[in-house]
Length: 289
Image (cartoon, rainbow, N blue to C red):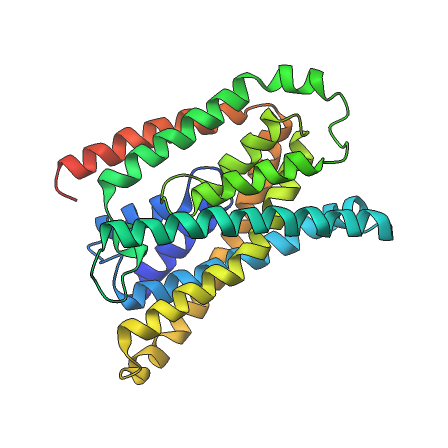
């Protein structure tokens, strides 16, 4: 893996991670087109650092919006934290359960089986992209109706809405291509949450989820390498740090674009994109990628 590969993957990750189009699907496809192995340990290390870069992009970009919305008073902060914790618990229960179930069913009898071994299979990514696209498309087409049911887009989120968003986020975890941000924001919109609040809450959930995802991938990397190739891992730190910086910058640009599209009422276009991308991934699988 060259430095150019790192930069390309960082830009793809940064742009796609914070758009509702599944960054993992885009990164896996890019890796395959570049002739790289998505399941290789060094690729796992790189993805960990790329996710770290986009996590910081989320914090920097949304802080000015989160501060007046969630931190203006002790009551709003407590409610915000409560809803985040509640949604994250649902994500852990549903997502963790699905991951363990899939690992036991599909890797029965195998030692140290990881669901990540399936993440490079395009025949699984394509239908997940299509499912995300349909959900986003429905939310976008029904956007006006959702707004009429909730005239105040900045109204407070209810416990039930947070639970629903957290549950849907859990469904996204095992399936590469089923966009986390696309599914959670669309779910919020369909349940009557205003778009700005749904966007803010979705990316706040991402900040909580990212450290856990990084820890899981780091554990997988250590187990795969069995701690015997520490020198080679150390040599990969610098390009990975550079990748995180590129992902951070690309992530900020993607967030600004996403916000403008949300405010302009063009959410449905992301659904169309996911459906087109699903067809493209199916075609790549057909041609042997």
